[in-house]
Amino acid sequence: MTRFAKLLVLTAVTAAVAAVSPWPALAVDHTKGQPGFCATGTGVTVVVDFQQLGGTTIVRCFPQGTRGTGLDALKGAGFQVAGVARWGESFICRVENRPSAVEELPIKGREHYRESCVDTPPGAGYWSYWHAGNNCPWTYSQWGVKNRDFTQGGFEGWSFSLNATADSNPVPRIAPVRPGTSGQPCVAVVEPPPDSDDPNAKQPSPPVPAAPVPDGRGAAPVPTSTAGAPVPVPTGASAPTSAAALTSDPAGRVLPPPVPRSGSAAPQTADPAQNVAYTGGENAADVNQVVKEQSGASDYAPWVAGAAVVLLAAATWLTARRRRRARDA
Image (cartoon, rainbow, N blue to C red; front, top):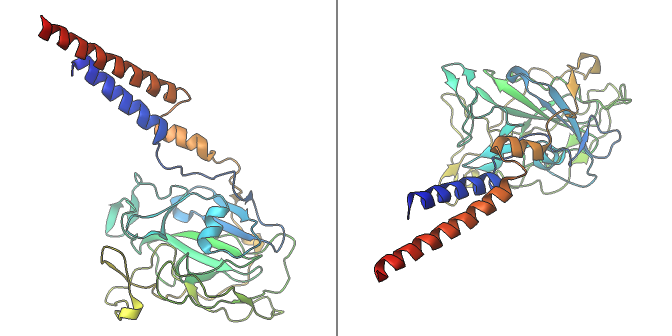
C-alpha cells in the first residue's frame, strides 16, 4: 500500500471513530425526569450533592408511579452515571462525570488519587447513598442501589463522601421535604431485605408504609443498603465469608456483600430552611451536545468519514492498476 493510501486509511478510521464512537455522555439528560422536586406523592425526588467536589447541588424528579429501584430513580431523573468495570452499575462510581478520570482527589494517604472506575472506589472517596420518606430524616442506605425500591413520594440522595468515617458521612444538604408539605408527619417505610447478598438482587416485594408519627420523626427506619459505591470493610475487619453470603462473578472473583454501617450521627428533623443553593440541572449541557464536544465530532463527521472511505477505495484501485501495468510491461 502506498504512503498516500495509508494516510487515507488513518483519516478514514479517525473520522469514523469520531462519528460513531464518542466518549460516554455524562451530563443531565433533559429527555428524562423533571427539574426540581416532585410536586405530588407520585414518583421520587433525587438529590445529588457534590459536597467537597464542588459544583451545584442538583434536584430532579423521576415521576414514575410504579415500582423501581434506586438505580431506576437515579437514571430516570436524568442523571448520567458510571459504574465500575468489575461490577457494573451495582456500584456507582461517577455521577455527572464526577469525580472525573482526570481530577485528583485529596484522599488522605493518597493525595493524588484519580478514580479510574475499574474496581470499587476507596472508602475515603466515594458516592454515599441515602434515602428518606417525605418529611423524614435522611437514612444511610445499607443495601445496594439495585437492592432496594425507591419510596413513592420520597427521596433518593447521593452525597460525595471525602475523608469521612461511617459516622461522619455527609448527608445531602437538601431537606427531604416536598414544597408545601412542611409540618406534615413523616411516614416511615418498612423495607423487606433482598433475598440474597447478590448486588443485583431486588426486594421480594414493594416497601410497606408504616403508620405516620405526628412528631415528624417517623417510625424507626429499617436499615436499608450500603452506598451505591461500595462501603469497604474497615481496617482490621472482614466481610462475611460463608458461601451463602458471597457472590461470584463469571470470572470466579468473589464480591463481598454490603457491609452494614451506621449513617451520620443521630437523625435530625428535616428543615428546608437549611437547604444549600441548588438547581434542577436546567443549565447543564444537553447529553447530545456533551457527546459531540467530548468526542470532538461535528455535524460533518459522517460526511468526512464517507468521503475518506471513497478516497481510500479509489486509491486502492489505482494502486492495483499500476501494479498490473508494471507486471504486463
